[in-house]
Amino acid sequence: MSGEYDLVIVGGGISGASLLYTVAKFTDVESVALVEKEDEIAAINSHHTNNSQTLHFGDIETNYTLEKAEEVKEGAELLAGYLENHDEGREMHSKRSKMVLGVGDEEVASLEERYHEEGFGDLFPKLRPIGREEIAAVEPKVVEGRDPEDDLLALQTPDGYVVDYGATAQSFVEAATEEAGVDVYTGTEVEDITETTRGYTLTTDEGPFDCEVAVVAAGSHSLQIAKEMGYGENLALLPVAGSFFLAEDGPLNGKVYTLQMKKLPFAAVHGDADVHDDSITRFGPTAKVVPTLERGRLGTVEDFLDVFGLNLPSFLSYGNILADRILFPFVIRNLIYDLPEVGRRAFLPDVQKVVPTMELEDIQRAEGYGGVRPQIVNTETYSLDMGEAKIVGDDVIFNITPSPGASTCLKNAMRDTHTIMDFFDEDYEFDEEAFRGDTIDAFPRADEHAEEGVAATPGDADGAESDDAADDNDE
Picture 1 (cartoon, rainbow, N blue to C red):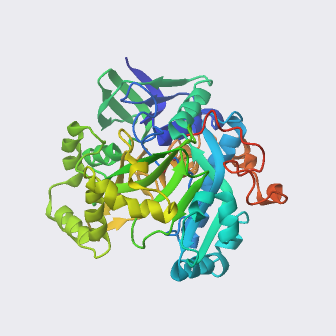
Picture 2 (picture 1 turned 30 degrees about the horizontal axis):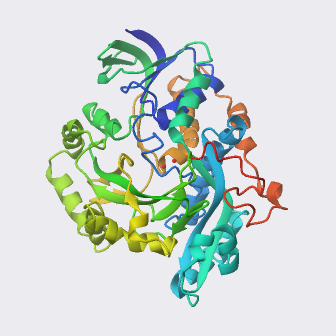
Picture 3 (picture 1 turned 90 degrees about the horizontal axis):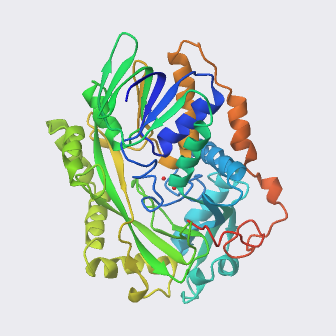
């Protein structure tokens, strides 16, 4: 197997698949290939069991500043529009209520300030502050059994998109391969990328690929490849494995987040019904630091050591990060959550903050769920880099973990496509208007929901009778 292409994309997760779709459908690039080491598209972190299935808009993520929320919002709307346009049968997503819950005077005051004074109410027209009675109408189990003296407030929105990112990635690939000049190679592992006079040669276990432009969208392995090519020497990775606990009998209709701890890059504990089975609610994630780039694959320990670097700046960076008075207790607590039986007992109070009536026997460790989400470490500043992890080189792009990952995959693809057009010295064109027409233009705006009630039918935020039962299941 070998081939010559204008563009080769390495990695068939949601990031690589969204770029393939964007280039294949909305540019006139003549030949493009996607190369994926697994036998199937989206088999690792994009698989629906290995992520939170959340489409992050920035509306209920309380660790986002207004500026970051503005940035993330467009990306989420691009993907939501694609799903609205191409997934009428709800095979790739479901749509439910979503809220962030404040309990007690301090948290309620924080949410009120966020909504009224910090500008989130203006940025998200569908977002509404609701009190105990309305919370109970949308999510009865959130109020049931709770101390009536507890002050409650939630910021709630109907835009609770629950996404099977693996199925969405496959949809992108299927759409792309309808076009001429598009090839997809699975079960093909890239062993080396070498710069040539024409561009790059990718050495794989199935033969060489030559291209003018390369994009590496291989998750944690992107930094490994970048370093082998002399890029990203000031970066390392802090791989974090996310896990979940499961509760059957569907105590929640939609997504219920708690307030984010400041300074943490990880999602706040939340509960949400699975995209493909709304009788199962997942609580989490827990977040455990691990020395591997892929969950459960000990062979990637060596890969982790490659991106760690085993040098003084890396050790100093890790020490500085893990010594933080907020992060260190968080890391220790999450290690405890992973212990048999002890972990379940330790995690129960986090579950009960969302659903007070939950008991120990109601939750079980979700075996086989969760992936590894790398956090970027800047070894020059000895700190975590909370921003987008992208390296742009000479006719090559490395996407390591675009923040917040899957939610902004199409926005990241749009940006990369513009960069790729620049690499080709404007030999090709990107029809961004058509791209937006196929994606964000299909996203339902606030005025389309003006007459919809907040409570609506539980499990269906659009106010219509739920049609998600058969396919309830993203970042």
